[in-house]
Amino acid sequence: MKHQDVAQRIIQNVGGADNIQNVWHCMTRLRFKLKDYSIVDHDALMKEKAVVGTNHKNEQLQIVIGTNVNEYYETVASELGMDTSSATPADEPEERKGIISTFMDIVSGVFGPIVPAIAGAGMIMGLMSGLSALDIISNESHTYIVIDMIAKGVFTFLPFFVAASAARIFKTNQYLAIAIAASLQVPAMTNAVAEGVIDQFNLFGFLPVPVFSYAGTVIPIIIAVWALSHIHRFIDKVLPEVLRTVFTPTLSLFVAGILTLVVIGPAGIYLGNWLAAGVEWLFSVSPILAGIVVGGIRPIAVFTGLHHAMTPIALQNFANQGYDMLMPMMFMANIAITGATAAMYLKVNTKEEKSIALSAVVSGFLGITEPALFGVLTKNAKAFIAATVGSSVASAFISFFGVRIYGYILSSVFSLPAYIGEYFIFIILGMIISFGVSFAIAYALVPNENGQPAPAKARS
Image (cartoon, rainbow, N blue to C red; front, side):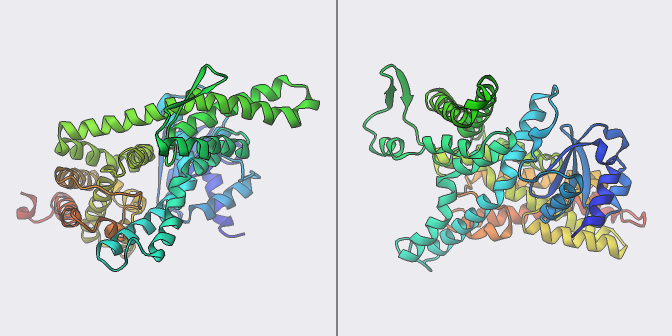
């Protein structure tokens, strides 16, 4: 089996199979729920070439692997005898957990599996937008329309993707969850939104069902699937076994569907609007302040695995406004992390360390910053601070000029075509500032590996 030896050593070094309550993964990390974290051998884990870094956060042991994390996850799960089709953070035994920890478990679990689809579709949209802005292809041509259909399908029916993923988190039937999502997007609802004739339906003549567009939304469906999971378990528990096959799904769908359309869906829309409005308020107070805050917290958010928390807000911005100003700042953070790592490449002496730094720089430009953070920057606090400063400065700069993006896209150099237009020059200047500031600060503050400090002029 591929990676079997590495998987066995990872299991051994996290305390053995008996110490593992659950394991799942996001885009780059294996995430373990353990009984006892004190027996984890971090040094042994770091000796594995496949392991970029480790982190204990939010009641999780995170082992950073990279974009091929799924290959290792499948092998580890196989060694543990787990069913990978159902293993999720919700498989953990019931226990009291903090709100933030629970929230991050849910967000990372929901978005981890579907981010490739979102990022892939966003990349296609960005490339097509760039080609259209350069007049290489007309946005009215059949070719553009067809390719745009391929990309927009993910965002139009995003609630379906979220429902399927959330069902795994909350351990409920995926198809019932998708059915709940479908109820929010049937033609009766979408046509009512498009025509604007009515603002609500009246269920049973007295229950209001507000008319909203749920396309591209995520918060309402996550809450709805959470409710469905509890409703389904309750009904399945109280019904006689002979009736469960037919009546458990029937009653679950009926009750959860009504609750979603009447209460949860509208509440989720209002909550999403509230979060987006909070971000918009921060920008209205001061775009520069918004850039400093968002840019400053992004590197530490990626390091701790909290960066997924921005995804629902960005998606809500696209749904509400048609654009988002957070993702360009995420781009600046990635470039800043890359710049500080490039400076570290000049500071280390061994071939192995230079190789690690160089590959991390390449990955950083491609939008994957965990190798840089865990493999390079966490070894030197000054370099990490340099990345944070570069991210804040560059984010404040592009925020001042109102740089925005009109579709979800991976924050890498390949996303540049999506910015072609009035903001293109500012995103280029932002990249230069982000890379330059973080590189300069890291180079000036971090001493050479052989103990010789950087030149005095550089440190001043």
